[in-house]
Image 1: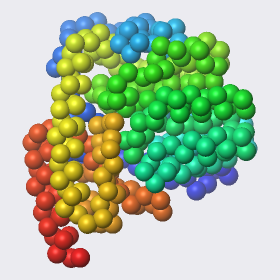
Image 2 (image 1 turned 60 degrees about the vertical axis):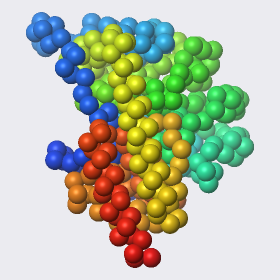
Image 3 (image 1 turned 30 degrees about the vertical axis):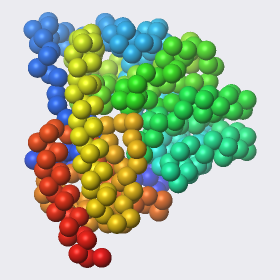
Image 4 (image 1 turned 120 degrees about the horizontal axis):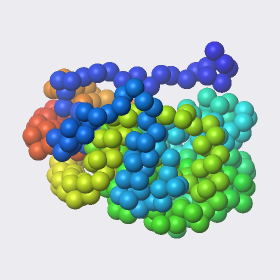
Length: 356
């Protein structure tokens, strides 16, 4: 094993089909019933998926408002994080990430032998803009990754803040990788119509969250012509399978369906907000953070105890227990799932209150 890989931990996923799954920020229902499977009967699974990927890019471009010629499709955003690191980094290069943020940014950089600097968010999880700009000036990074809205905090950073980060990186010859996996929940991306205006901006988008296609593993990279050309040189030629591309293209072509699906999710997100607000109000010291996503983060001392308690009741949430964050993250679910969650949270909070 290479030295740069020593100390990395595998991202383990345990299949659990009998659980209420509120831990991965997935959509709580499938749109597969809206797919015309008769079209798949003519799928040439003996051929490589060039044509289907082209149709997918066209459909995504129309849906999301990006120029198709500046979009590359991939096998989820995870593949793009890895390929961006391969494209930009030499061993010893500097990379900046926020803390907390999506863990795969750091892992992708470390695999390439880069040195990663973590910049802690403010106590309210807002962006420490002056500190970020200072670190850019001091470290001269090749890349900076950040998710907007942030995962796991749910925080939405302002357009002006992101603009300042882009300009600071450009002065040092660095690239900002702006992961907009949850932007559909927050509204329109302020950068969708002007991606070509930037020399050093890469936007990542996914079909795994608001579009409800996590199993298809569809991620998209959007950038200017120069970056697209460079990354195309290292991208596997057939990295999106035909079936995923065909189903994704068909669903993305049904904009009314996806709009209605998003409205349904927003209703459930509002219901989840009500549930977690009630819960946080009952637990001494609990802090609920505002969110522009389909999940909420709650910081509390009994985070692990709560996670274990819910797991015993077949409800799975995400636990964070590192030095900087003792918290749980809960994703939106169905009304039935929310009712079970509400009951379990009430039971735990009553037991917890008796123990303090």
